[in-house]
Amino acid sequence: MTFIPSEAFKSISYPSRTVKRADRAVRCSPFQLHFFQTIRDNSVFLSAIASNSGVESGYTRSPVSELAAENSLLWLIQVGVLRREVDGQGITDSFRLTPLGRQLVEQWEQEADKVPDASLCDRLGNAVSRGFGLFV
Image 1 (cartoon, rainbow, N blue to C red):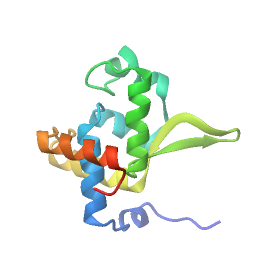
Image 2: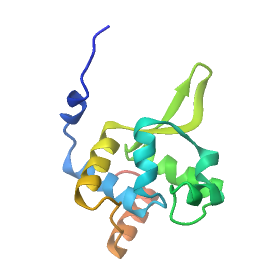
Image 3: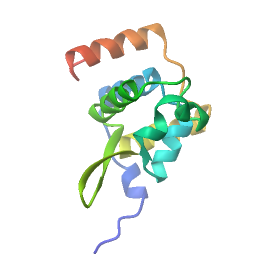
């Protein structure tokens, strides 16, 4: 088995449009930087994100329903920030960061140690992207 050092993942180059879309999607999501830092190293189950447990864990800014949390997580999967965790039985309800997600988290840790706030323009662009797919 070949060992690939973690520096190899940092060399992945994404198109700027992809990075901007992913950045905007995370800014518009209900999740805080602590959530993304946690799933960088450990998987987190949906039940730990939804409701008051998400706020208490520092994962969300305010309580979100399980359906809203899952919809936000699925959108972040579509834009390439997250992936679902897989075990021996198949896909689970836990999530992990992708290499693109890791790059964004590292950038935010260096800049302000938080996910930047979304502007009105970010929110409109994200809504259009979600409505029309990944074409915007």
